[in-house]
Length: 449
Image (cartoon, rainbow, N blue to C red; front, top):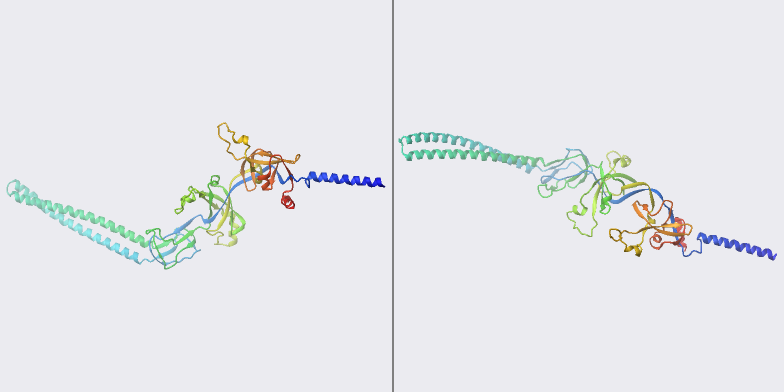
């Protein structure tokens, strides 16, 4: 009986030892020096590199209306939000002063014409006088030659002729000057009539009154005086664009024609599509007339993204005819898809970290004599046999929000450490022993410790 009990005790102890060994090898306990990590397998993926930015929605085409002449608004038959067609009356400015100017200019022109007619009559008289004195001069010249008259009489006839001739030429000059005066008066009449015409402002293009900044009875300043008063803005709300500021580090990646995903705060559950239609040549700071440029400022460039109507056709149809889903000034976030590659070797972004170069390599120079200045990028490859990680230097390519391309350093099928982030960036070292746990349990296991 005692022998049986001993055997049972021995068997139980053996089972406990075996279970303890299995549990220890699995990392449940006894591995206090191992770091808990999550891993992922290196494989081929599709990466879409993008540049994120935020901005405002504006009509692609908008026209700011300012008057050419100053005065009081006496007619304003439109309201903000109204639809207008090209040539439709928008504003009428008080015409009384400009009508008077037209009448005054016309009177001045008629007076100039009368003066010219009078001068022409005087020319005819001067011409007749010159002809008479010329005949007398020619006759006295012959008589003087034959010594019939005295020299004094001849000189008097000659002086009369020259005086009449000079008077005739002066009268012709007066006619010419009068003609110039008439031309000047005609120009004044044309300008006065044009100013009168400009008191009536019509729509230069069809669209929607997106802004109305004045009311009937207000006085406005024309563009002839300073900048002029902005009366309203006409916009084509059927073609909208998003204008975003992209930093100088990202702007080289962006090209005209790049596809863009757009999220509008007013429609958070939907994404719209667009294409890059314009990239500003000058920075936002240079385009600003009031900004003070500083070397500490971040340099941004404005990118225009045309929203594709087909991407929001359903939203527009739900609103009904004549209504538009987007209003100028709405906030939007964009992801400009600058590059797409399929079937490339990639790992999660968290798997790639940086480390210092070994002291032996810090002073090593390449064939050109330049010191190593590249940032050392590494990943930690998990070895299941030794339960250790091996640090591998890698070169990376494009990336999206989740994955980064690996150009060299590891191969497809390798298992790399991807979490926790703090462990990857600070704690892991070459040949460091780790314990692999499921990614969704890694933080739970850490709390239990």
